[in-house]
Length: 113
Length: 111
Image (cartoon, rainbow over all chains, first blue to last red; front, side):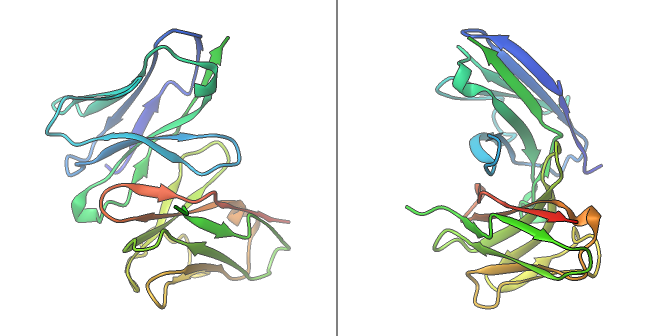
């Protein structure tokens, strides 16, 4: 019940295209859903996060869509650039769990120039 | 401002050796987390501190793993009698509220 499932495992998108990564969760106690970007040899960096009281949040080229009833959320990267090539992780946390995060398995995104 | 720092960045240990990994959180961050990231996987929770109190250690894989944060700032993760399966990147994160900020990690290789 603690698992967060992420897909696809890898994704190749042309420059300027839209990259979409999906996640699903089981535990209804989760109330905080961040996305992290990780480059090789670096720690995860927070990109954007959402709480279940809204269905969408946009920051620049990054948008989270959240479907509470389906227990799914997704990351959209608009106008994808080669510099966006990295591994992306979704995660979920709960206030009652002191926000320890449960991570998805990761998506390796490659943006072709 | 300074982010989360971890040292050493790389550590090679022989099987059976003890290791100590250090985390310097962002100044003023009350909460501190340790995660383990195996190659090609997402980080997995190990333990959580609020100030100096270790409130959750449910993710520590065995009693060979021990963490402390005696003054509510710097934290040390210690692994005794290292095994090959301990090889991973150990990530530290600190937070003030919801947002967790990660350090660069320590890559531990056990030979």
